[in-house]
Image (cartoon, rainbow, N blue to C red; front, side, top):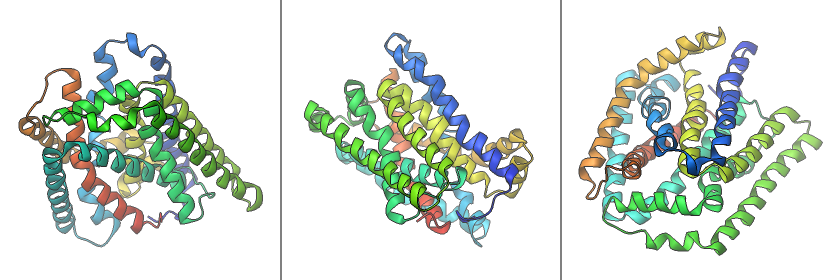
Length: 345
C-alpha cells in the first residue's frame, strides 16, 4: 500500500481511533503517574515493560517474516526465509557487538531507536493522520529527527539520573562500567540538548505551518502533529524514563506499527473497516505468536550469555532491553524496506 492510497471513510475512522487517538489516551493516563513516580512501587514502574513482552511491545515486530509476502510478489516461503536470514545475520552481529564493546553498542542502540521510532511516526502522520504538510523528503527527515528524538533526548534533559542508571545497567551486563558516557549527562550537555533540540522541534513545526498558510495544506493534520509533538515534550519531561518509555513503547510506537501491518492483511483490513477491532487483533496475535516466542528465546539467550545478569528489576530490564536492541536492528531493516516500498521517502 502506497502512502497515497485512498482509504475508505470507515477504515480511516478506525485507523484514527485505534492508531492515533488510543495512544493519546494511554499517555494522558500515564502522565499523572509521572508526578508521583518516585513514590510508586517498583512493580508498577516496571509494569509496562513486563506487559510489553506479550501485549503489543515485543509482538509488534513479530510479523516481519510476513511483510515481504504481503507487500510484494514474494512467496511465503521465500518471505520467511529472507527475513529469518536478515534477523540471523544482523541480530547475531549486533549481539556480538554488545559482548565486545557494550558502551558503543548502547550509543548505537539509542541512535537506532531514535531513527526507528521517528520513521514510525512519519508513516503514522502520512497515512493514519492523513498529513499533507510533510511534502518533501527533507521535511520528512526533519520530522523523523524530532519524533524519534523526543523519547531518546527529552528524558536526558528531564531525568538524567534515571537515564544514567538504565545506561549503566545495560552496559554493566557485560562487566563494563559506563563512565565513558558521563559527558552526555553533564549540565552543559543537557542544556545544549534542550536548546538545540527545542530549536529543531520548532523549525519542523514552522515548516508545516508554512504549507498550511501558503500551500493549502489541511490544517487538522498539522494541528495533530503540533499537539502530539508538544504533548510528547511535556510527557517525557514529566514522566520518569522507565515508566514513560514502557508506556510509549507498548501503546504508542507498537500500536501504530501494528495498525500499519493490519493494512497489509486483507482480512484484518476488512475487519477494521467493519469496526471489528477484536477480530483484527486476533488475526495479528495469530500471526505474531510464533516469532514472539522466538523473541523470548532471544531474551533467554541474552540472560545466559551476559557475564553479569542481575535478578533485580533493573537487571531484568537491562537483559530485556539488550534483547530488544538485538532484534531492533533487523526489524529496522524490514521497516526501512517497507518505507521505500510504500513511497514514504
